[in-house]
Length: 262
Image (cartoon, rainbow, N blue to C red; front, side, top):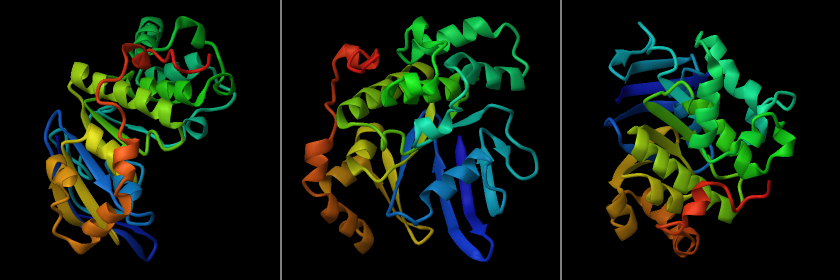
């Protein structure tokens, strides 16, 4: 579903991503970890088509990028801050209707209702504004907006970082269910190794714009990393992963948002 070879991205004279190569199979969840400034989010923005100063080879859903873009709506992104990514003066209905209008989808009402139901929001949330929603509900709206065009690839940039720990578990459960039901391909950027281990099968470790090591989640949990930088990350997270790994079998109501304030 995703193939990157010698991918590089720049901000003026500064190289943020330097010769990165990786691939993600259809239906796989692939994690990218590393310290701030390592190039993780820039790499995700290249995949999303939001950063134009890049070079190398990138194929998304079988379509080489740079010569002919992927079919519209095939790659969507969920950002870290749901309040910042939603227009404060637009209702949930308008936020979900906008991508449908851009892509000229007729009769948007059933699609909007289905998208809200898929992320565990009630019909009453449809005409509320972002400030009238909890943080978890806002992130559910952002996920619904990303999925309303039914893309096969979903890019997740720290999707739970701005949420409380209890709400994080609910959003993780939601993302797991959506991936399973829709056979989605995920690329997840996160500082939180526990969340990466919960959602992903493989993880790439970035340092100074480069991927220094790839691990399976089993290797991550067993702490069998070879690169010194990866071992430093694991050492820094020791204990944290045990304390903050969400429960593997959240209660069903977690997916429906019942633990959040209305």
